[in-house]
Length: 572
Image 1 (cartoon, rainbow, N blue to C red):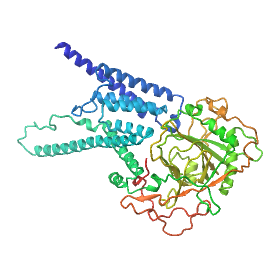
Image 2: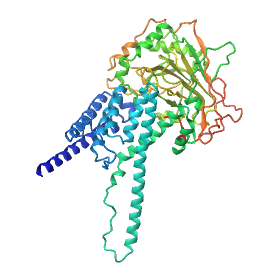
Image 3: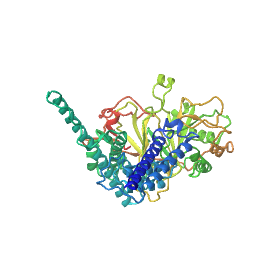
Image 4: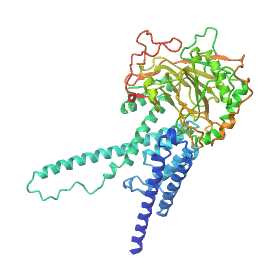
């Protein structure tokens, strides 16, 4: 009897140690230096230490639980009945979830999927874990069966969250009934004070923030499933989800389920699109090779920025060189060449004084919609000048056939929902440039991708007439860290990737004249936005207006107006 009591006490101590350790790991991942003010901390030198701290705590939690006989081969039963906060299976699964998230921070998607699946095997009733597992599989989906499994995992996540939602509703009804009973009893002089607010079950754990996270994951799973269904061509099924989430408008099927027909080279009868223009064979061959090598998968650039799907936005800025001014880096030379090329497409860019560049290295299933001027920190100067945006933004593709097309619309910040839109597919050495004030983005790949390890690599340049460069210190400081609009790092800092950008021969690129450049025709979309209640109603122009784009086309004046941001489904 004493031995049995001692074992139970030891198990309880181990579980408590596991819970404390897991709380520290979750804090390091969720609230610590991995996510705090992401633009300035995610890239910081102490980032690897924060990851290691979280990993160590998570592993200690697993060790404690394994001593309590909860192992990777364990599986919680549906009738276990324990609140998730005290459930050792849930704690074990959360520890594996933390290890999976750390794999994501290290850009190891396949390893993350292994950890998420292990968590799901032990505790298959967590919306957070099911969503993580489904999202990782969507990123790695290589065939139709994978896509079916993604859908199942997302539906299971929604169902798991709904169980907690209903349990909370029942708890609130019970509390309300008890409060009413107490009110009645207080008016009864014969009451002996022996009323109870409980039926014997302590369900106060339902108010814990852990449950908040589980329910929020169910909402995220609904959004992910909605995107999946729309891209699979099943809008009727998606409509119910859209309505349950409160959306009134969504990106149209012609955006999310984009045509797989490739863009064509322009014919003699081609009428140019004022908002977006594209050319193939845009860079000289040696310039393309330089850029491709500088940002290839094993480049120190990615490692030194701790680049992953979780990495926040960061960019570097360069003043545009005056005529005959010597370049300080190969990037100066490249930007000068692109600027001259873009002036032929968008003459307004001639007044640009600075260039801001950033690069992306992403998976097949990725979407980012940008409304210039909507996000980002604003200095006092920016607030005085109003929302800022570049004159023209550019994309140079360094890969192809990964992910969806680039979307460009005629919708600015504050405009009605776009009534015009175009898409351009990725192709190596294709340059796409567009009015920097309009909504644009990358549409997620709509299907599985046979080569799951292939990434989409692109190099973006924005040309500005003014940009506030974010200098962190007056003198070069090895602790300076990446963020938005940073000056290009000079030699002697903590980065080695800058060595890849040494000045090339002075006149190789800026003055190059290419004979094989081809104009590309952007594909016009039937609609950019649709009304959820009526799938046939799209954003259409009210009438001809005077508000013009950079080359004369009207900005959006659709009859849908400008709804609240939260009422519009954008796919993420």
